[in-house]
Length: 143
Image (cartoon, rainbow, N blue to C red; front, top):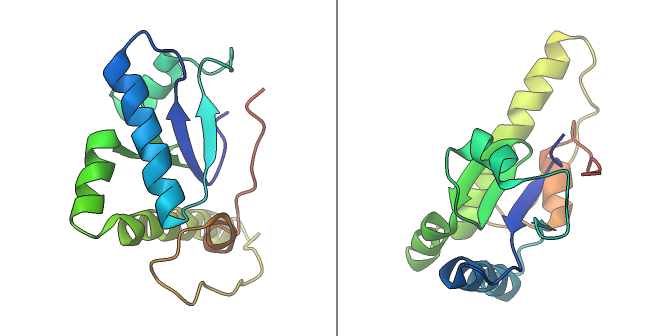
């Protein structure tokens, strides 16, 4: 099972230089903007393969950004969002949509989570806001 919350699948293997460079650039962009995420380097994980990721995203190149098991963006999309000044808002929207979907499912099962406070800054997409945005999810082990 893939981890829940904001997850970026990357590779540290330099066989494809552009892919490795895109992974580094995405990391730098997120670090500069203070966006917290879980990074899963496929070189370090034997249970998660490119095919596992491709099944969900229909894309093979890394890096790829997911919220829970939902594909959100590849590097080109993240770069475009950043250039247009909508990266944080787009990630926040994805986290909120993910949380709403989980809360609706839990509510229909009669197990809705306790209400949580929402982040005060709508552009904020840190691990703290991800946890608030998705009260139904908790990080799952990738092993």
